[in-house]
Length: 357
Ligand SMILES: *[C@@H]1O[C@H](CO)[C@@H](O)[C@H](O)[C@H]1NC(C)=O
Ligand SMILES: *[C@@H]1O[C@H](CO)[C@@H](O)[C@H](O)[C@H]1NC(C)=O
Ligand SMILES: *[C@@H]1O[C@H](CO)[C@@H](O)[C@H](O)[C@H]1NC(C)=O
Image 1 (cartoon, rainbow, N blue to C red):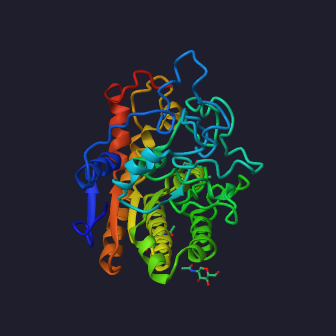
Image 2 (cartoon, rainbow, N blue to C red):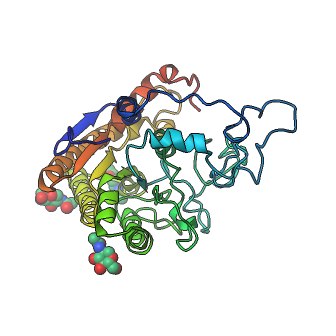
């Protein structure tokens, strides 16, 4: 995906998912696959019929996290694999960050920062998975669009018995870039701990499975490293203290992007080359910030918080440019989360949601 065309420059895009889909369309070996047949390749055509020849219940689909799609298999069938072979743009997706992309890493901890209960997961047949969403999150959808299995929560994986090298998800709700963000909630893994877990993954999981060091290097350099983090460092860390001056704000943002760069460097040293790094969202438009500042006007945004986000994002873009020019072979795509979330708050109907609550 992030091919030679974008190597060594920071490519700025408006919405990362659309970009992936466009590239994948142009690089596929065939534009489409039409599948006919019986249960060998059925992906759930009988699900809605009142007949016994269907398999949208357990133990079918046990390899799909939180879903039983209707395939009479534990996971993907041969037609699925055929489709993904013609379409694999990256061998794996490694996901880092906060609740935006968490798939259940905090589940087994005694913390308030988890979502493995209803109404979370209402779009999954089996209910909650630990994702703080009703269904798949952005990283899941990107894995699927790359033809990969959805990367599982690293803390639920046993390296001894697990055998899929399509990537892992290290994201932990309430975490941030700084080690002290969210630590008042037990079990939260900071970005540094997440990248340490990735180091462990390379040594204990990937290295023993690859035939030689070149295969490992190729796997890592072609894989996508997807990071969504930073807003918790503001909302549940920096902004918890009152009376912050403008210079405090600038210093904090500067400090934060430097710490972020250190983590990205660590991934680079371990072999990562293709990064997708998200800006922080329009924090001043988040429902909680708006409710607190303007209880009677849900259509406004808190400019002060949005300016903080914009200034941080400017510094982030600058440091990413530097990283790409200093690190040979690295490519970074910036996920323009600020503009996207700002537009969503300004014009929710355009995104298919008429009531924000
Ligand atoms: C913050 O500033 C306000 C107004 O200047 C002042 O009254 C208050 O005591 C300050 N609070 C702290 C925690 O310094
Ligand atoms: C912020 O940085 C400026 C310039 O480096 C420095 O003068 C100032 O003392 C710093 N403020 C804090 C609160 O660290
Ligand atoms: C990865 O872990 C090993 C073993 O703990 C350590 O020696 C090495 O410095 C780590 N690598 C990075 C890039 O952090």
